[in-house]
Amino acid sequence: MSLKIIVCIKQVVDPDTPVSGFQVDSTELRVIPAQSIPPVVNGFDENAVEAALKVREQIPESVITVVSVGNNFVMDVMKKPLSMGADNMVLVDVKEKSLDAFGTAKILSKVIEKIGEFDLIICGQQASDWDNAHVPLGVAEMLGLPSLTSAKKITIQEGKVSVQSSQKDGYDVIETHLPALLTTNSEIGAPRYPTLRGIMQASKKTPEIF
Image 1 (cartoon, rainbow, N blue to C red):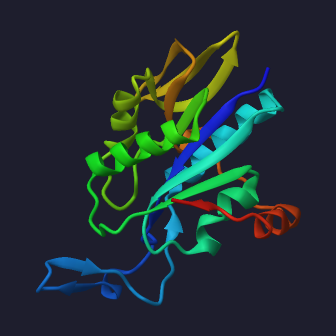
Image 2 (cartoon, rainbow, N blue to C red; image 1 turned 90 degrees about the horizontal axis):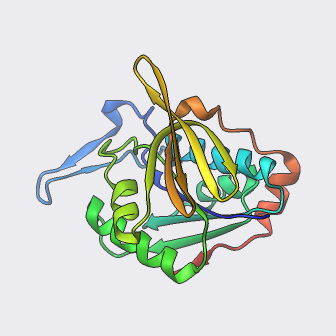
């Protein structure tokens, strides 16, 4: 048995950027991020990559493809999931600088359909820039998939996925059939550090850009 896993990630402003580093463009009514501080991969999305890698440890022949929608991608930043152990990457470069959650979910769902067959989609539970948590559920709705949220542990067996879904007073155990979409939080485990071998392998891989 092998799985085709898709992980959705987002390039975001470094959440540790001091407030003094931002400027406000009063003409376009938007915030200009600090130019001297590079962006990062959203923290919960790194947890999603870690979750995918743990699933592959359960099912070794699985293939992990990372997908991201955005613009002005910094390749050294975006390649981190590849250096952690993901197999492939697809980047969707959009012209709209203020793409909303609905637009992002729509593009992601179309790209996932274009990629083809998949068994599992894993997303971080929310992004650190807007904190809406809308995109993963939007993708699930558009693709007609069951969605399990806030997974802290994932088990796959006999064509079904079971998760421990974090709650304030513990966790719920929820199960559904594959294909499915999951969101993960930090309780899934800290993202592993890229190894030297992983970094070297990632440097040789070229993301597919739409």
